[in-house]
Image (cartoon, rainbow, N blue to C red):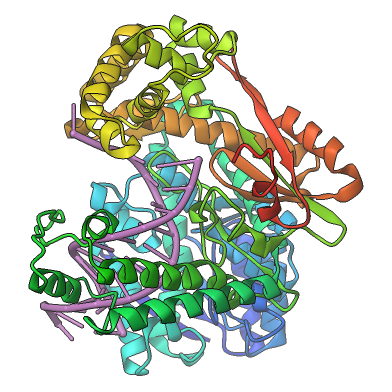
Length: 607
DNA sequence: TCCGTTACGTA
DNA sequence: CGTACGTAACGGAC
């Protein structure tokens, strides 16, 4: 047995590293004496779905606040058996981003998600309930290193968590490539690995009392863990990829890119270099004016659109083709497992407002809307069809219900078009027989922009509404929806006094006092997220998880057996819909063919 | 090799 | 005084 020591704030912690089977007696004693354990794994990478072709677990670590054990499970099957035994023996397991370690445990140790999730406490969830802000927003951050720095010891965070960077340098590899090559008994690696369960254990005990009483009273801790378990099951299921379709699009986009790079090459040798483009356009005599926040000349789509020169068109088309190919189609193919599926990483609680995010091989939340161009690369199971169920007007309905605004509520109860209502308030009534107000766009832009915390400028820039119309519509909004105005003021006042607002689910959201106008948006966005989360949890209880593929903000994507698709879509939509403060948030389903994209290509699709 | 900046896709 | 994300790329800093 190897023993390492490290000092956290003058307190010595001990890391035991098992070297031979004889060491396991003491490991077993430790586990039996500690029913609540910090837990972590070290692996060869992040691609847990490739456990049948190269992905391996290397170390399994267990610990309390002052002592941990590192089992190099890769060198000894008895260590592996001991790790499995410990996972089963533990009453509670504390891990940071425990979802990853659950996937690893399932795929490499055979201990399924269903067994670990009920006793897992994830410090990322606790950290988010205490302070959801990123470090650059003035918060604690959500990564283990950031939390260690904020709550435990800055030096420790730098030394231990930064040590993998140093190790990578020593092995002369990139930081991302160190995981499979670092030697099992490299002392720095063992220290890094052995500290993680200690840090997770300590963090939980620091964070637990800081979780707001209202969050605890509303049961948010248990609720978020259940949600994380369900999204982990969605990750495990993965999404079937139509490789032939992706390959076809890749070839098409490559040809497109080459064509336009060729055109651009008369003037620049790199279409992605803003520096070269600025020089080129200036040399042609174009006067650039738009600046970036840092004061450089801007070279975005708006600027390129305004320049009447073949280079501008070539740059737009070449860069777009390259980006679409790499970001969506090649990412999907690169992430394929041995069964032709990709596994997204669903961060069930991520944004300031707790919105979920999806990263990795299916950046679903950034897929181009409007048609099925990208989504057609993702398929329902054999014999299944794709279905999408989304909430209708969720954020505006939340705004209406939360503020109890009589005008807005009346419009929703009477099933009237709220964008028309806002347009009428600003510009007068519609002609008899008209379905759409001639200035409905200004009404729509205003309704959305206000929800974002915006002003008339947002309506102009974001929705292409003339300045005068935008100003008039925004003024009319606040004069018409007095309940919304009062609610926004109430939230601002709460934020001004306390630095926080609370949502109906008991979530506490910090609001920067210099940006009080964002309080309304935080409330709405976070409440909408919680309504989606609630839907996911209720669908899970009703047995729908095997059919669920991805959450996309106000929409859930499913793979349903073809013959039962209509019935299941209807049942799922009824489970999803929710009455928030007396107002129904309706859910509506659409069924396509095999691919996700086919839903958007339906003739009568609302997309 | 890392990181800040920029651009751009979504709700 | 326009919210929240993730990804790709450049180019200067190390």
